[in-house]
Image 1 (cartoon, rainbow, N blue to C red):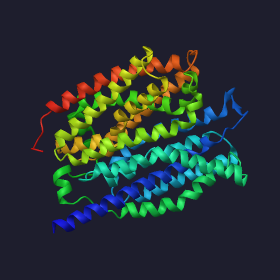
Image 2: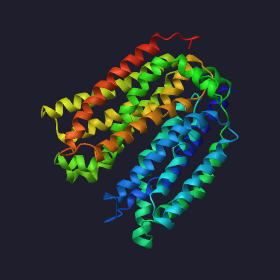
Image 3: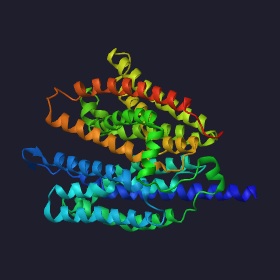
Image 4: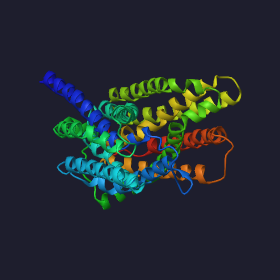
Length: 417
């Protein structure tokens, strides 16, 4: 009997990881391919049109996160696949409108539903003994998918003569059927069994009253975590979108082509580190371990910038350390952290609520900083902006995480874990 249960868990882990990875991988084909186009010499109100498109989609995506605070945690399992497919179809229709009109408003509409896809997928993953492994499968998708769908978009333009405005629609079209297939596979995963519920707590849809009740119960700790994530999300967006410019300014523009390789190694280290959390059965020890890795990430960012300014390490090594430290602190917010918090305090709920409160505020902070950087006081270069930002993220993030760790360590647990 024990052996059969083990086999069942192994199959669940394999199928679940593949399905979660594939669904979110395909979803990126409806969000990122337009970035493969340059839209050269096009402007809107004197602003580079590609920047307008990026900001328009980001604003729509951010609004989607706020909508997701109430939508994602409240839907039932039966509703989930239909909403997932329906929202992707809406995003694809927006790309169709962009192809016909070339207007940035359709990139805004494209972003509106896409911010909720992560939560729909993670709802199948959470509340299980192997959640960390399944979550790693899902999280690894956005590490590789962005580059792949951009390559597909570039291929459609160069080899098939598809225009920059129609390329996003046709890229999405190529991934729509695989998305349907893997959504069906994901939906067929069995619900968490009795042992899952015993170890990780039952996961239920949450109405408005239940969401506020949860927030009030853990408000101090949640606020500290949210503050840190606003900083991490902003830092990630700046580093991700302008890595080439930063590397060029520190004299390593020639290594920009190798950036993807170093980022993959960063991803491997981060994902293995958090994947091993699945071996920790005690939810309290798991939470402390996750917080410990997040705090270590902040220390890496802080130590890296101090050593860089003291000319004690290579600038490219410093930039790599910012990535490793950042993702050690950032990745848990995509579900692992909140899944274990719910399990520790045995509060019937779901991780989608906390993920979307966290994401919404994080992306709002990113939008504000992006607008400030592009339309606020002029900075002489990217490094004059990125270096002080590194100090802020490291110090404030570190203090917030340490305080949150102390809070949750002292918080009374209703039953032994």
